[in-house]
Image (cartoon, rainbow, N blue to C red; front, side):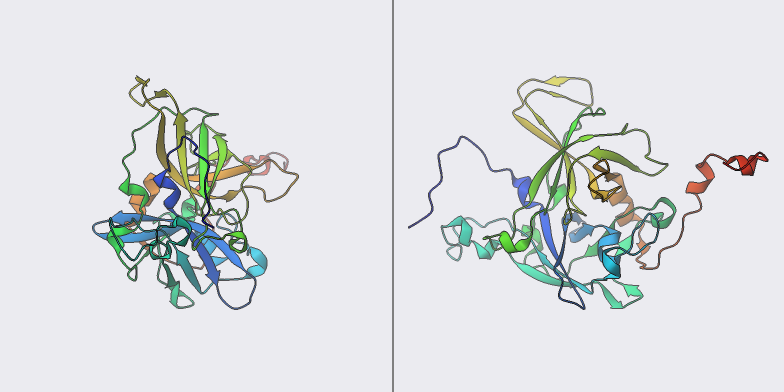
Length: 304
């Protein structure tokens, strides 16, 4: 019997196909997963995810995470745009494996020579993102890339809705060839225009989970939307805007506030236009310390 669906009045959002499922592989059998997304530039397709995903090191303090486990490669599953009247694609959408390829992406030639690139100020600003050029995609032109979409600029306020599009659920519970991502709702928790802790990032209030590191983050407005030029679009049903890349909660503890970190979208362009060679050796930041308030002991007074 073929699965039937109720006749909801809805439309499928193509952005749901923009998040990639990353299965991290290496020595050891413990399943690890993360999220990434594609970005297109000059005919090339790049995978973006977090630096801590590929290194197993916390970008903020240089400490190992996940018991120090380090991936060697990524099994990357993603979605392709369908080709009209393709007889190789079955009618049942749950069986469209032709639209859900998986490729293996090595992370390094040898342990200290990774293939990825990163932001020039990665360690000075603790920018937790990397880019990997993908050369073994089946048909790069059909891959869903976040910047294939056109986004109009909204007005954003502290408290505005945002969504983290990532893989919060384990692969083992998915019946699809590629797990579908989850739209995890949250809100902007810091003033976007103020660099969080002197870093090009802002905070969100969202109860995310492991596996969502590297997710694209979108603002989504249902109904009339306030635009960047201060006009109001009253005819809108739904509008979305890409804001940046999610890199985890500040405190991964059930008793702490669920505050996550999002790196601004312009860092992606900066990373690709002026890349730094990837490194898995964490370097402590010095420029951030220049903006830290002096302790009493440094001012000549008693220690704080």
